Length: 335
Image (cartoon, rainbow, N blue to C red):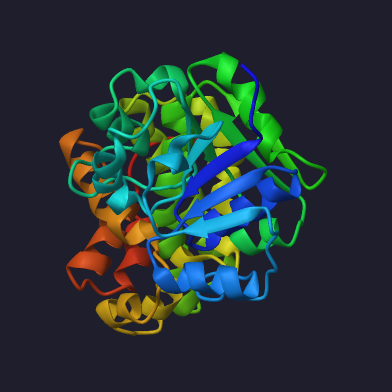
């Protein structure tokens, strides 16, 4: 099959736009679908996504649109950078236009709140036999870092190894390195569940807790993530890689982290609903926290950290209690 060097990206938030810039820098034409009219107008007029990625100049190879037309789907790769809670409805609206042989790449992170499913399962629900043409991306990568061409590494995962070389080619350059995996579930869970721990890490920062407390919190949080993910079919080794501990470190410590920022505001005593309403960007960990909490209850997994974060976000629990829960002896070895 001769490639057209044409890629379509659905979702023009900061991450979708950064990916579009990276791929266009590699010489590909990019159709960038945005839900918001002001995003399209900004890119057309200023060659810049001022609402979501201000200050980053975009290539003329990027063609934004609000219209969900059939020509959007005539591309080598269809890339999805849609917030997780809207992926299902988006796929339903476009499923009849998606060619049966197109390669689909997910770059979003999160767990669907209503179904408690990872993104790969949402795709499977809507598109039969999707696994043979599905790739997912995750790893420690802030949108601005990628857009500024700062060295970044991520993981691409698929159960179909034939898809990975082509997917690597559209993303890779001297500043953007990709590694591969066949553990789709593990890569997606690592990228999703770390957002919940990052909120907790931010809460500790907001409370001005010690670095020692934060390090212990993140480590034990990773243990809870690994325990739950094992029940969901993930490979333990995946959490030692970029999409596991790598992404967790960035999100829990990075100043650009939306999830950590949400936690910081909460730790300082600000109202959660007002925090969420004041920003156009999505802290996926807020929604994922409820899903992960329900999953720990379903599988009867003792998860004091996950439970603490859920209760802070949804039950108005005192954030200071989270530290006490960290110090509870759960009887599980430190592995």
